Every structure is written in C-alpha cells, then in structure tokens.
Image (tube, rainbow, N blue to C red):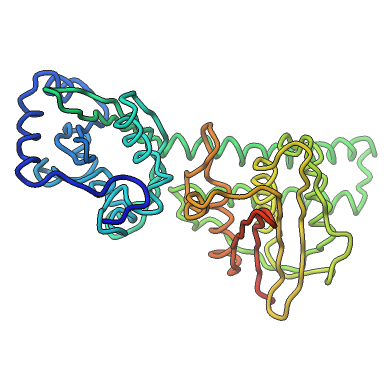
Length: 377
C-alpha cells in the first residue's frame, strides 16, 4: 500500500487480540490506566490502539473501548485526513506534518520519548472542528514487544488564549496609545478642538470597537456573530502609510526591509478597512518571521478587471509537506504558544467576510507570495 509518511501495515485480527490480552493483563499498564488523570492510550508498533483509559474514552464519545481497539489515533478522533489513503491514519500527505504521527513514529524508531504539538481538523457532531493537543509518545517494552504509551493533553483553549495575547492585546495597545496621544494634544490646546484631531479620535475609537469585534470572530463562543462588515471607500495611501508606520517599530521587522508601492492604480477601493488592515498585517508579520536577516519584504497592489489584489512576497520557500496545512488553525512550524492563527484568520476574514480569495504560491525562484483578491464592488 502507498504511503506519504508512516507504514500502512496493521496487525491482523489474531495478532491484535493477543496484543490486547497481553496489555490488559500487565499490572504496570493497569496501574497507569487507573492512576493517570489525563488522556492515555497504548499503541502497538503499527500505531493501533490496544487500550485507552476512561478519560480518553469519554472524550472520544465512546461507551465501550472495544469500539476503538485496532484503530489509529487519527481514526479514533475522526481526523478528516485519516481516510484519505487506503492505509489510513499516518499515511496521507497531511500526516507527514502531523505532530501526533511524527512523535509516535519517532518514538518507535529512536526508542526515546518524543513530544510534539498536534493541530487536528476533526468531524464532530456533523460539524468540522479545530483542536490542538500536546502529544507525548513514550516507548515501553513488554515481553520483547515494543509498545507506545501515548499521553494527550487538550490545549485548544490555552492556544486560543495565547493567540489572543499575541495579536489582539498588541493591536489594542497600539490603538489606545494613539488615542491617549491625541487626547493629550487636545488638553494642551485648552479644549479648542481641531477638526482634524476630532476626526482622528473618532476614527481610532471606531477602530477600537472594530478590533474587539474582530477578536470575537476568532473566539469560539461568538461564532462570528458580533462582527458586521462595513464596506466603504478607503484610501490606499492611508492604508499603506499606516502599515509602514506600524512595522517601523514592530519586533518582527528588525533587520528586514519593507518595500511599499510608490504608485497606486487607483486611489480608493470599497472594503472593510479594519479587516483588510488585519489581513495585510498578518501577511506581513508571517513574511517577516519567515525571513532571514537582511531580507526584503515586498507589499504589492494591482487592479484587474474584476478584482483588486494585494500581495506580500518574501524570499523564503515553504516546504512541500507544510503547504497543505498553511491555513489550518493552530498549526505552525514555529515554537511557542498562540501560534497558527495568522494564516487561518487571513482565510476566514478574506473569504467569509470580504468575499475575496486568499491564496499563496511558493518556489525557489520567486520565494513565497500570499495574495488577497477582493471583488470590485
């Protein structure tokens, strides 16, 4: 059988039954099943489930452990990629970048404990959900047989909160700082309100409310109901000026050159300013974080017959096994908490809310370019 990553072979029914009996009779395994409060499973060398504790069984929504014996982890959690290949979980192209698959395969081959973060897209209650696990795979030898103790920790909520801290609070702080600065200037003018400053304060106040609503879209509890798209004519010059000022002091822009367009095919387009700003900011941050010292990031803007297209290019390339996961929530090649929300939100805001199209291309010759094509309105 063909595979893109892990071995597709499985134990036959007779072998599987013997392994399950061996595990169930082992006092060490029994003790672990009774004492470990988290999510725990025992796998064979073919990554098939031989035993699970009650906590994991309940989380998976099964009443009887016999239902999942012989399945692989991705099949048990209803990962949407688990059945893309005849060999099942571990054999698709997506599996080559799966934290769970990598940790299990690495533990089996190295005979050492491996720990990774796994971002999974699962089918749950007739809906698609994004979940995130901390996965720890530890080898265990019993009667000359190698097994894997698979410890899982659901960190979905922690990752979403960390993402909130990384993006939302940073953006809010910038807006509040600008508001405070304008308010201080107003005090110095003895209450004589300059019309331009009044407009700036009003604009920043609206931006603050918008940022709160945008974050609500990313929060599970809101389901995106709190954001109303506001389509209006926006200045391309103002947009690029604000982006340039924002990244002048952004930590990701250190030793990176940002090239902005000097001329624009049109002066204004009709869209939601705050959403567009958020999408382009995420594109630029991702490009900068992927770049090397001395690299140049290029922001482009073109007008076609039907679309206005923004683009962000950097000179680095994305590995082929990563490209299929670029827009998956919680997935990131970078370490640290709160990652994997930037590209996901680009797609969400650009397509669901602005009715555009978010794409990317990557090659050794041209580097990586993310594009947002917005329909003319």
